[in-house]
Length: 135
Image (cartoon, rainbow, N blue to C red; front, top):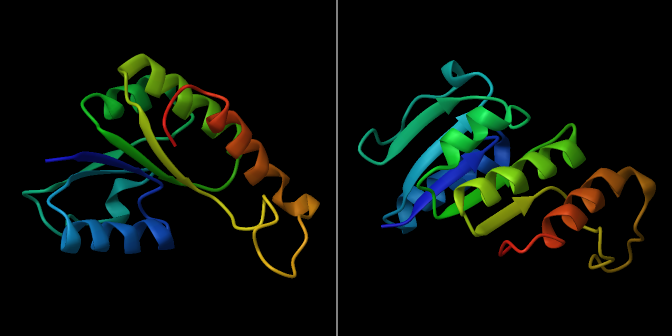
């Protein structure tokens, strides 16, 4: 069984991803968000809810222990969040990262050009891909 840490678990994409994980896999999920009271466990046997801020490295590192995969769906201080995630991953030996932030940062959306509003997302990607973790 795979252990997955979902960062930003109350976000729209993260809530949908949680439903897919529960429906299509046997993964155990740890849902990590700033205000844990906003969520209830959809499957107490497979889901743990933890309160914490991604920028709080000790709390994030503790949540990451024993996880096989980190799924991050965050907004805000993207550069700092990515740096803390990578540090926690190094500290715990976690090697797999799925980081969803924005489309278009590589020019992969036909007919659209990369624009400055996407700079935080591009910076996040550069920090995580420059690390030896698997993303």
